[in-house]
Amino acid sequence: MITVKSNYLGELRTEATHLRSSEKIITDAPVDNNGKGEAFSPTDLVAASLCSCMMTIIGIRAQKHGITLEGLKADVTKIMADNPRRIAKIIVEFHLLSTNATPTQRSMLKEAAITCPVALSLNPAIDQEVLFHF
Image (cartoon, rainbow, N blue to C red):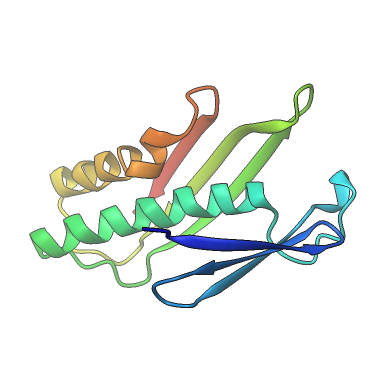
């Protein structure tokens, strides 16, 4: 079954529609690669997907163990490389200042993040740096 339908809108812009929900995502080429930078670039979405997947898996583990995640936030930094142009590194920095997680549970949450499906699916040449601030 098809998951996403995509259309090229011209001027280095695309629109992807998630068929089950009808939600849409617009991408635009970044300014440093001939685009306008008016929306997420495809590589921005890769970085955002990594973070979202990590948060989702953390959330699943937290629910299972009664851990509060109120105020969980993350900052994502994507670093590009040239020749060939590619993602060289993604830094995901989590901030969870209000939680009832024990030190053992915090380790479990960290493990959940770094073993999420997106993290395990990315090319191993992409350096993934994951930081936690509890």
